[in-house]
Structure formats: C-alpha cells, structure tokens
Length: 154
Image 1: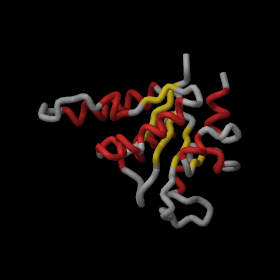
Image 2: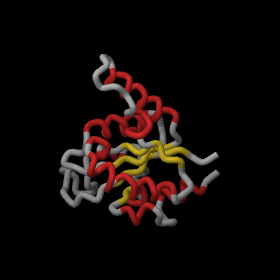
Image 3: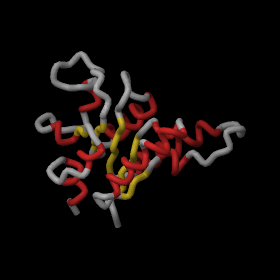
Image 4: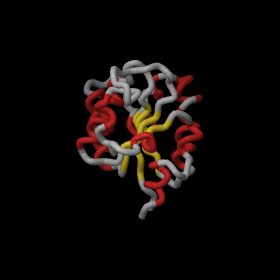
C-alpha cells in the first residue's frame, strides 16, 4: 500500500491554476510512489447552493490531513494561502512529516535564515531543513532530498 501525502495548495480555486499548476506537482509526487490526496479533487464535489457546504468541505479536508501519512504544502504567496497554513499547522501538531514547496522568489519573512515565517519550519528538523524545502517541481524527485528518502522508507 503506497504512502499517502496530502497536497495542501491554493490552486483549486482557479481553473487555469488547477489545469496548469496542479498536474506537474501531482505527477512529481506520484513519481515517488506516493498516493496524492489533493483536496480539491477529493472533497470539493459539493453543491455550493446547499447550506453547510463550507463546513463539510473543511471537515473532509481535516479528516484527510489526519488520515494522510505526510503533508506537502505549497507555500507560495506573501503571505501564503490561509487554508494551506491551517492544514500545515494541523499536520505539524499531529506530528506528520512536512515538506514545503515554494517557487515564489518573494521574501515572506523577517528571518535571515528562513525564506518564510519561521513557524512554517517547526515540523522540519533544524539541521538540514533545506532538504524538506523545494523550490521547483524538478526538485521533488531529487533522490537525495527528504521527500524521496521518506517515500523509500518502509
């Protein structure tokens, strides 16, 4: 049974981003033998005209974070998407392995060491945190980085 990874991302809100940005990320994660849980695909098949739809989507996303083996969070933006930050925070609190993806060159921090708010790195080891941080889709398959090492572990 493959390991599952929750792909926290803001790309499902835009048809163009959903069609152009998500597929390469999903393919790169799947190339490592992972089963990708993308929340817009898994939990957004709801009737938005029905009361309570937002609560149901949030609960389904929460269950997926809890039930997944790890999280891969797209942290583009300045600041990154609020929903992704909540999902990442839940995963960190649950002790899930966390991996960050940012191909956005803008700085989003006051820290000299980290390219983002330091709290996003609390689920990542202090030493070698760069192995858990990805700046391109091509990096995802790098066999020497943390995600590929984690995917290979039984």
